Length: 299
Image 1 (tube, rainbow, N blue to C red):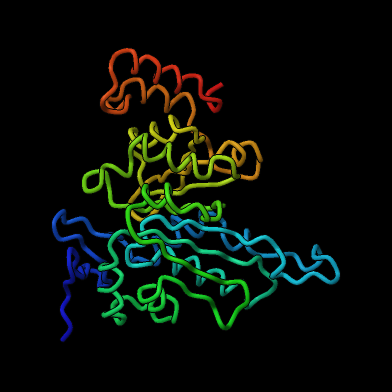
Image 2: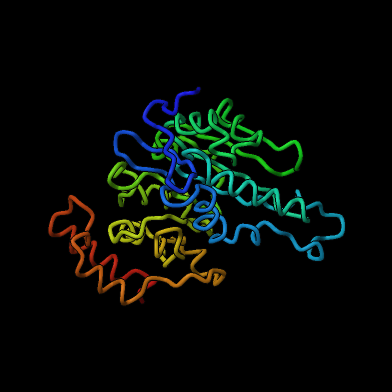
């Protein structure tokens, strides 16, 4: 039988019978409490209203226009892992494309260690969402285009995400960001103010929404400090809440329904031990406090 371990990862099977990938050193499990696709759909696909965002109204298309001529919807899938979030988006798009005209979808994944995907691909009976031509192609070649549907493409950027942001000048700006890195305990550097500042530098000029499972005060504070507007996300699995961040253009569009953090959250922030990013001197702390208090969403 094929090994259930590869590199830093192993297959974990929950008491309920579904399988996930576990990071062996930290013990952290991707999608620990619900099957990977259930969590991927609830937190990322349904919450971002992906089906609605890609569906085109045939009546609104100019007479000669093909759906493929519409502007592609771009998703940044940050932390590909075993590809549950990417596949949930891809399968959602395919379902809509089967039913009627859709915008093209450009899926851009980022990952620094492909072993979790390679391991899951060796055990497709445990990860049935991978029974599709796309994830094998992504693991082997880093790129895939649908033969069945025009307008569906997926590309992978391997390596450190911050480094990729600095060097990949041709990245299409995202409409949606699925931010699904390992937690602060395992991968602290991807949840810092600096990490979100570099992300904002890459997408802040565009109307974008970011979705993540973390609700920590430190993470929400870092997102606000970087320039995002931050909203309460819906519950997902065992989490009673998730987090949504919006670029200013998206926040001002009035096209989102998520409640922004307000006075109650600011009260919590004032009392929190995670009020400031680490490493600030007293003057830096005072300046950061003003940055948060004067943030447009609290005015």
